[in-house]
Amino acid sequence: DADVTQTPRNRITKTGKRIMLECSQTKGHDRMYWYRQDPGLGLRLIYYSFDVKDINKGEISDGYSVSRQAQAKFSLSLESAIPNQTALYFCATSETGTGDIQYFGAGTRLSVL
Amino acid sequence: GDSVTQMEGPVTLSEEAFLTINCTYTATGYPSLFWYVQYPGEGLQLLLKATKADDKGSNKGFEATYRKETTSFHLEKGSVQVSDSAVYFCALSPNGGYNKLIFGAGTRLAVHP
Figure (cartoon, rainbow over the protein chains, first blue to last red):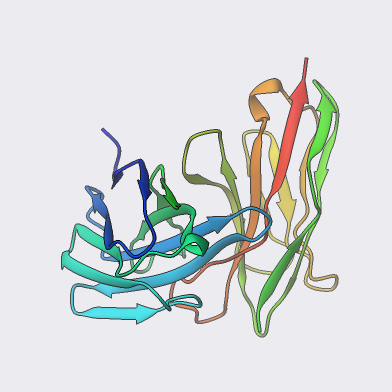
């Protein structure tokens, strides 16, 4: 089983709909992250969390919200999806003091029509 | 702000050719530098890292040297294989950046038999 699991793997939704992407991990890491990947732009950080009570905005947090339900679960919500949120979304984890190495899930491909 | 610039792809090579993917960075202080690889349909995984000037990271025949004087971290491999076909991302973690990664745009490598 994958250490970092993202669900769903693919999602098509319509403009204005609320959607939640979920991430769970079995690595026991305290830190979790959400990125989006767009062609030619690499990965950009949306939100990150250093523990259950610590949530921080990344460089492109507008239009997104997150919830850290437990150490192992970190979900990303689009309150009212818009077409330019069509992208590949990745969840990642890391452990404090291990030198900035992050472990990624397989990604969720989201299309907003 | 901190940033990473990679050579544009795609890079197309024949099997056993020499590979170089250029990466330069802009950062204050002393960032850590990384190469991540993304195989088709998968999340990113760490390929190699270097934490200080003149360090050489290496893994699976790939290597990169942290050059502070030229602010570069070029990825090299002496003889590529078809199985190396993937997207390669250069990334940095800012000095004191609390595990935050800043990614380049990625370079797609295609290796043909």
